[in-house]
Image (cartoon, rainbow, N blue to C red; front, side):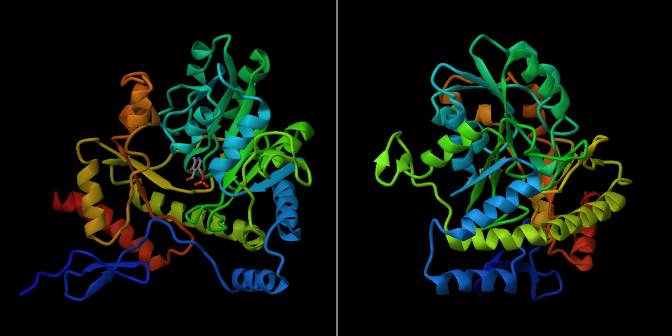
Length: 389
Ligand SMILES: Cc1ncc(COP(=O)(O)O)c(C=O)c1O
């Protein structure tokens, strides 16, 4: 007899064998919330025949700029491009150093390398998972040009002290908001504080265009340069003044983006409700730490990330997945320990908190498509880990 597979895939849905026989649908870690409005917005664009560089991208940019509260928004092909071009438009170049966090997705730091500058890693705060402002000053040198912060898991970092350092030392502030659409710090939207900020609209993000990104800045010259770089370095038609790229967003993507932006507040409040439910049920368990949001910070729950003892984290991960809960580890290795960065000379021990925390974290599904039954299943799966161990 052929053994039953451990997992089957059907139309992007994952199933695992149920204990009672049959199949159990896996609760995914992320699920885009797309509906009729997005479909009809795309259909309209397709019927119009205007697929690129038209009014939909402009409309999306305007709406996003007014939502975040910045003067300029420049739509581009993805969040990585937004960061890469943003740094270039700010004038970051070879010989410069940029202080940043190692506990993030690789793109936050690769954008510094793309510009042939040097990432300098500041350690994180173990409770918020974000850059610890107290560690920044000691890393500044005459070559430091900027501090690049990341609002990880949808929670703004402690911006006030970072802004003070940037002001006092004449440094640029860059915000990686790829996971923080609509998040707030002291009543203002993340993305409105930096000299430049970048958003991602990748499929798993709080709002999506499939792939997509947005650069935000209040500086006219930076905006103009960034717009030129994402469009082949053109000043006028076929007048190429700098080395540019094709990093444009399509009209189909922009049309989806405007619809998603309208739905963002509702999607984020579902995430908040789901996070609230998980915290109420899990905070009493004693063997795990639920997420911590300091006063003055309004997270948008891109991820709901708990911490457990490093010795049980991987077993908990296996257990949850075997129960049909698609838990994930973001991120199992800080950036400075990635093989690429090791090959550049970064060493273990430079950011001990990030290194330790990367062995403790585990993210549970919190996306807006979760129903009450899903939430109860997630809690039961976590509870049953300790009961069974
Ligand atoms: C923190 C962070 N920065 C940058 C990016 C890059 O965005 P994109 O995937 O749209 O290129 C991501 C996306 O996953 C991210 O999570």
